[in-house]
Image 1: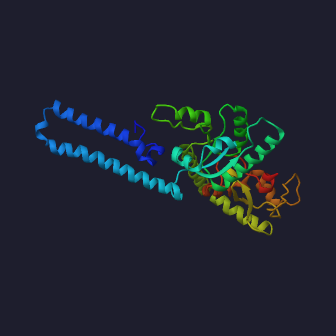
Image 2 (image 1 turned 60 degrees about the vertical axis):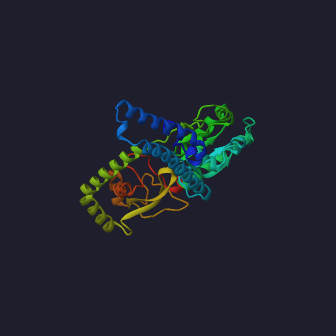
Length: 332
């Protein structure tokens, strides 16, 4: 691992690892021989067996690495090798030097889509309009494909453009990474340093880490389940009261948008005589005639919101989070 023999680009090409394998195996064999000499235990071990082990060991390791690299390259070619699901966005020059296979080989990233910005020839009205359209397409594609990351292929000196893109990508709850540009890659290619792959730079972190998501989910499930259990008598009485008060279902369902823009059906106690969920949704106002007598009490006490605890348990909502809006209002 110290020699970088387990880097993605190294695992795909065994030929580039042979020098490191020979150095590591030679150092291991020398260490064992020195240890036997210092402990005066050399007479207890067969020289022939030791030499055979050293020779066969390095041959088998090289052969294993060769077969592994061959299988990995085949997996990359036919698309069966997984990795972080990424959306790539960048200017034409930088995208040209970062083919899909190179991203998987170098960074372990599986490209789901590639979006090209305008040529980096200065901020003009046409360029900005085109870039905004491209970024909006990136956001839609990332949500539709359930991407894990967004990769930026931009010139590192183009700070204004990078900041502009990151600002608009804040609509996505995903980390954004800046890939090494042409200049940095050229410098690395001329370096004698064995590790010539520079990790992408995180320019925007996700709002929650994997550990944070686990803690938040455990919190939601625990307290939503407890709240439902404690309020079950109230829920039952409210359901019966709604059924006796007016005609219609007990539970009101409406399409809302949650995490990362995903649609789900929200559950609330019905407080109105209508069930709006389409291209037109008129919000309730003061003294709204559509609100039932019981509905006014439920709204004033927020009891109508309690069925949303079911949405929390199913993962559509969280106890702590932004208020989800109706789809038509969210679009507006």
